[in-house]
Image (cartoon, rainbow, N blue to C red; front, side, top):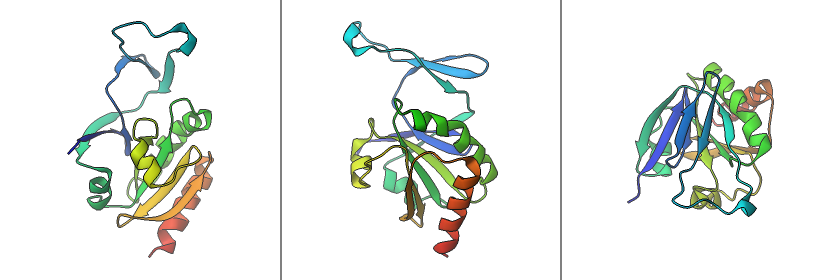
Length: 161
């Protein structure tokens, strides 16, 4: 059985694979270590992400995370190359802080965990699925402002009660 590592960013969890992190005051830059230099045709460039407080949690599976969550879970299916997905990072941090008593937010990189993305038929990015009691109760696609995201989450949680 494979172990899935998660990084919690405030109340946000992100599925990830090992990477080298270089921190500065306001951002995190990351790059992958290679034994050989990648071909120039790949046009690889450093990426910068917003700095967030993080803690690591490990689960045996995605289902384990859903089944053992003490609150509903909002899953953000994203990719590192997706502009709207990166736009959602500070918005999810804000929403995670304001709804920390109601919901847990989990980010899943669809390129690193394609089996999970395929299971939930992810066709567009970002895609958000709200899970309550381990089952999907709402699904929506695209970037949203924080206030609209909060309203959508609240509506999904109230509809399933």
